[in-house]
Amino acid sequence: MPLAAGENSQNLSTQSTAKAPLLGASLAELTAWVEASGQPAYRGRQLYQWIYQKGARHLREITVFPKQWREELADFPIGRSTIHHRSVAPDETIKYLLKLADNQIIETVGIPTADRLTVCVSSQVGCPMACDFCATGKGGFIRNLEKHEIIDQVLTVQEDFKRRVSHIVFMGMGEPLLNADNVIAAIKSLNQDVGIGQRSITLSTVGIPNRIRRLAEHQLQVTLAVSLHASNQKLRQKLIPSAEGYTLENLLAECREYVKLTKRRLTFEYVLLAGLNDLPEHAEELAKHLRGFQSHVNLIPYNPIQEVDYQRPNPKSIQAFVSALKQRGIAVSVRYSRGLEADAACGQLRANHI
Ligand SMILES: C[S@@+](CC[C@H](N)C(=O)[O-])C[C@H]1O[C@@H](n2cnc3c(N)ncnc32)[C@H](O)[C@@H]1O
Ligand code: SF4
Image 1 (spheres, protein in one colour):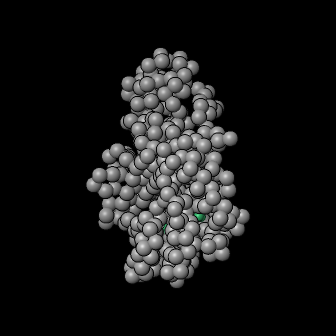
Image 2 (cartoon, protein in one colour):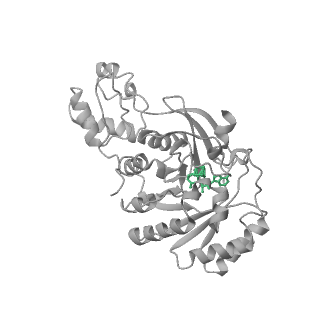
Image 3 (cartoon, rainbow, N blue to C red):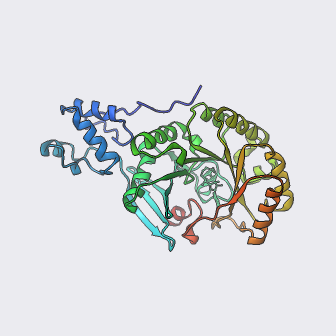
């Protein structure tokens, strides 16, 4: 059984007592909503364009609507966050702290290059997985994000950069497969309503039993990135406490099924921690696991966080790890976090502000 995608679940009400945000609703749902409010159907398309293309934050901004109706709708929520804090790095990467309707704070990052604007989105407020090297994991879990709160992050970056977002990575706070219904529904809306190609979206997961298999059944065109970080179960369990109930063997078996079902190549992420998982024997062990796997390894040199004292490997060890994998026929690249060195690690900016 695939996970329910949350489609058509936008329980829109015209009553002031039950105000489900409009963001995340389809054209058909918005049209039904305007009609239920006593307006002609064509206003549904106008509303749709103002929400998704013009990025309207309040219904009162929608000047094509009759003045009286706008006044009646003045405090009806579209579902947009506010920018609580904004850090701009020398390379123009911008890290945002966004404040949600219940005053919770999440991190979102906008990463510009000449030909793309990528948004790193959060899927949860905090994260229950408690990975030892992750500032978000150290801060505990508060709640899942709603579909509109995920879409809002993309619209916020688009508005702030005054440029279309081209790519999305679910690599901010939280474990997306623990919030799969909202994440899948948001991906579908970002694709259909905001116009971002599914192939330009990457979902990163640390792995939750059976959920990679169930994700495959949705046949999305997104890239799946699996956070491996270790070449054996003992080491993985040390870094990722939740791995205790999900062996490396089982995780890789599910990944193989994913590739078979979707015919899509997987990415494996591997945070490099000096002296811990970056030695030649680790590269050799990792290569053995991934031999013949339709995959690509993305090495992420550790970004220091204040809560633990792991070290980032020096460039020579990183290069040696890359060469050891390449020699064994494994496709590999290194990802250096852009900008904001002091707060580069996911969740670090938020942790410093709270
Ligand atoms: C923050 S997680 C969010 C997605 C998902 N929960 C996961 O773990 O794949 C995205 C990626 O950032 C990595 N990451 C977390 N803390 C890091 C750190 N201090 N340095 C480098 N990478 C880190 C994770 O291992 C993961 O591969
Ligand atoms: S690395 Fe991912 S799964 Fe682990 S604590 Fe951080 S956000 Fe959660």
